Amino acid sequence: MTKTLVKAPFKADHVGSLLRPESLQQAREEFKAGKISLEELRRVQTREIKRIVEKQVEIGLEAVTDGEFRRSWWHIDFIENLNGFEGFVPERGIQFAGLETEPYDVRNVGKISFNQDHPFVQDFIEFKEIVGDRAVPKQTIPSPNQLFHAGIRNPEVYPNLKDYVNDVIQAYRDALKAFYDAGCRYLQFDDVYIAGLNAEDLFAYEKLSREELIDLALHVVNSVLEDKPEDLVITTHLCRGNYRSTWAFEGSYAHIAPTLFAKEKVDGFFLEYDDDRSGDFKPLRFIPNDEGPQVVLGLFTSKFGELEDKALIKARVEEATQFVPKEKICLSPQCGFASTHHGNKLTEEQQWDKLKYIVDLSKELLSE
Image (tube, rainbow, N blue to C red; front, side, top):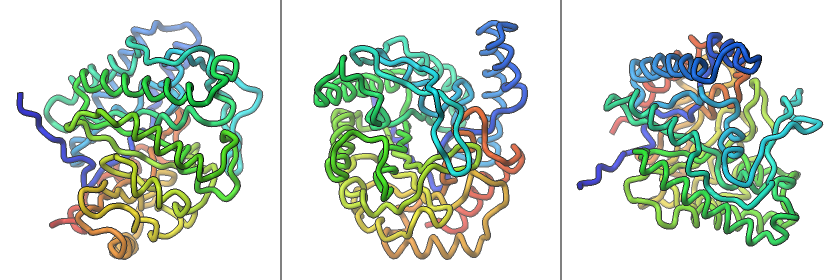
């Protein structure tokens, strides 16, 4: 059978999550309170996913997502459904700029492997059927590197970091195979972990040097991708935190670029460049210019609804071309609009207007 290669990431793309509508939020609360069944909750989720797929296609996006409408958090729902992990409520949330997150996290409780009944796989199958041939269905999952924050690995289960690394890699290899077999051809790793390796003050990491942590992160992802099918597009999205329109840390990509930008074997990098926290474009010079990954510039913020100035976006694209060819550049928001069920501080209308704006500007600024 001939394999059809997906040309992702696209000139106009987006990270994944979308604002949850009130009907979905209400259904979630009713399900938690025992007022409706899981089947009834899924009916609401499916109805809303169909609606946002229609909207994404309507505004011209070539890749569409389910908005992450079947999950509460961009990362935890996936991880707690792997064998060897469980979700729990810690005493405190994570400190962001000006607020603390709702406390919920994951911990390692046993040997790690991919759960062959992982709900995300069936969710993708249903999502793909909804999309049909109108667009490319894009799947997002947390990067395997997210499992290496300090405090997640259980030293009683894994006294040796190497054994933990190997099991995480195998679990993710099996995850990629499961999604591929389900028909997925465009999958994104969301990676706050490697973005955090740029911060001057490293926190919540294994007790290794910055260089050792960067090398480990590269080894983990590249090992997962070692036997990746040729027609499965994998991208990495680097995020500095996105919770109720706030952020967790700042720092340019200078520390990680010589290793991760140069050597991570993904098909594209989604990079935050929506404000001064992100630094300049100089680290892009490490991305290989030949068959290297596409560069998706997150010049538009998902945190607020105001549309960015067109002249400024044009100038920033031109500035980026000093370090990476224009033909390798794509545009997107810097992150999702609702990395958690809480969502960012903008309206759904503003969300769609911003995504349509990105589609229109990509045609104007990046046309061949």
